Image (cartoon, helix red, strand yellow):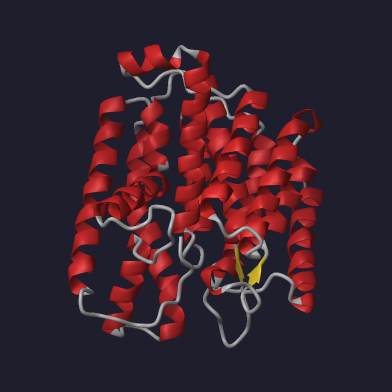
Length: 352
């Protein structure tokens, strides 16, 4: 259980940044470039609060012995903020710096992925250099995939809450599963939940800075979590993180097949197509569509989380869950693409 003073400090931190940034309009979507705009609600700007707020939570509550980790979080938050403010517009440079920071993070924290239940890959992972670069690759895929799905109000923050709650659930279901720094995990979940409440209604958003920070933490935590719980299948991690990971990989393949520039942003992600499809049907008032689509996508993912959480050690079931999710994604993408083939409306999203 969290202490009351921790809860109070989290709430005070959120509203401090909310009031400060709202007053000075330093990080709202009316002064950010169009590529980082979010839904404007009732003619009020949405505040890019995720990065400063979540970074503050990490710097305050992560134990002192992890100070190198705090430095990397600070640097990757600054990198995201530079992207948000369009001081760093070259995606290749941004990804290079991002990977360099992840490399330092992996090296300093001695993170490693040493078992994928595939002999040839496990042999390759036994070589330290390959293991480091593979771990960097996995975290980079997660970070950029998370940034991709952060295109609807509350989608990424809501998804991450479900991921972290899943960790608590399986540890409660099986007491032999160890949750490291459980107090901080509870603090971080509560902090994201406070953010999510305002995020889902479009008052605040994560931006690149927030999505980088939140996904780097999740990548770090889940690798550590898997490392200290050898009973788990590595595909449990894949099953609960399948959406941002596959979104990234599919976007890469999609742009390659269409001969588009791989690093060039677009608005052809699944959640974009789903939004446009719902908008075309005029089911609900326009100002609610963004949040409505996020909630629907999160609810659709719930059964996948439930099955994964009941079978966290059974590789064949977890692989089947990931496969089914990918098939549903591809079928949905194909359906929405065909439905929207001749449908053109103004863009309401950032491009990723």
